[in-house]
Length: 229
Image (cartoon, helix red, strand yellow):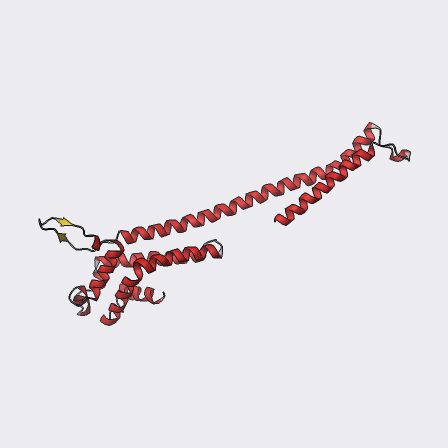
């Protein structure tokens, strides 16, 4: 586009120079009476005939510049909208992770209930997953089929998180962005998985396979999610 613009500007400049030279020459006496343009009406007609195409060309150039600027602005707006959507989805995923809670009550020495930091967010997901692998904790009940993972309060929260993650993955693929920008968003998303989810989900997937819970809906989804990464 820049090359076409330079070509148009070059042609306009040449045309302007030709007109300037033409006007100068037309004011000089001609060796033939038919070409004598010194009279006011002939000179005006000649100048009008020369300038009209150039004015039209300049108008075209200005219109071209305006349309190009508008197109560029539209493209920038589309890029911004796509980026804003992806940032919003990633921030929402982070909020879902940080909002995770282990459904258990803790009491201090005075018998007052409180929320321990180990039960919250990514740490809470890890500790919950760890308890599902411990045969002296949730793992024992799951392995003996005395409890179903699908019925755990925390299970629904974890599955919602991985579904949000999968949604963002698909949204990045379909986004109207350059390949390098998609790679940046994919790297950022992968960082969330590696840092906050990977170890905990892999523990769960391994436990479900050992306990033969692969027919339950939520364990099956978690195993599928982990195995695809």
